[in-house]
Amino acid sequence: MKKLIVAALFAVLPGMVGAQQAPRGTMTIVNPFTVSGLTDLVARMVAEKAHAKFPDGVAVVSRPGGGGSIGIASVVNARPDGSSIGFTPTGAVVDAPQMMKGLAYKTPDDIDPIINVFSSYQMLAVRGDADWKTAQDFIKAVRQSPGKYSLGHTGNGTASHLNMAQLVQAAKLNVLEVPYKGWAQSSVALLGGHVDAIVINAGEGRALVDEGRLRILGVFQAQRVPYHPDVPTFKEIGYDVGVGLKFFFFGPRNMDAGVKQYIHDAFKQAMQNDDFKKFIASREVEVDYMDGAQTKAMLWSEYKQHTQLLDSLGLLAKQ
Image (tube, rainbow, N blue to C red; front, top):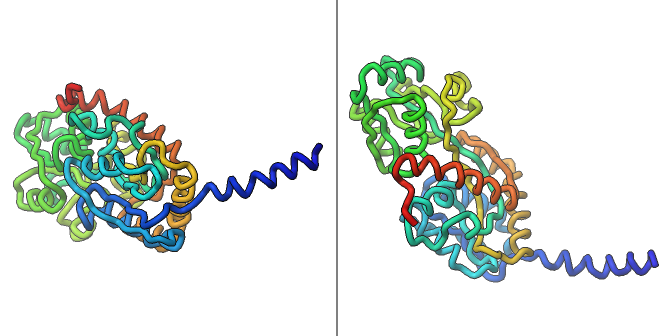
């Protein structure tokens, strides 16, 4: 009987191994944001390090627009055979479908997460010559002069906006909110004196910080970051705020399990490459591996948390 069981196991194993296979034909990785942004650069780096695992080739294409929803919808509507997958930060899946009607996806259950690659964070920055040396100084000044100071972010519903909004709510601040299209515009506005503070992404402004033209006052996450070890988190100074960003690969719902596992394993190996680790560190972010199931749980947790925040800001769409 034992011999029969062992024989049966060996008979099954080849089929199990064979179930994991690369997608047939060129695999397209959709970046739902602009070319040369962090999402695009990391997707291309992973593809480069994993290309040997995909004999039919890997191509990265950008399909920006609609806060990432256009590119994500193209993956959601693709065949679940691994021929088209996406790479995106959490906001496009967690926040966009709650703020906009008629999207091809509504919740994290409408995609099939494959692997989370890294996590990022945001910070509050002021000019290097500003009177405020700490976040407490800035908050005190804003409270003493309601409506006098302005705070820049990168658009309604973005992580930058949500972090700023959380701080404004928690610290009971009265500020003028000024949206910009991105770092290029907001940094010029800050340095030119058109806005008093801005919310920036990890890695942005490193040269300006080193030159003393930019000062980081606080970090929007629970732990301090090694790239700014002397900068406290807002949680440390009494404000439990912080909308982080995680960047992950995903496919259409009900993706072929064998192909999904193959892509996961290939990308996980790419993440362990020394060049990839150095590249991630150069962007002042951290490799943060999670498998598909863990990524799905993370997305649902953030989705539910953000529902209340978006509602408080009047950004929750009436479905």
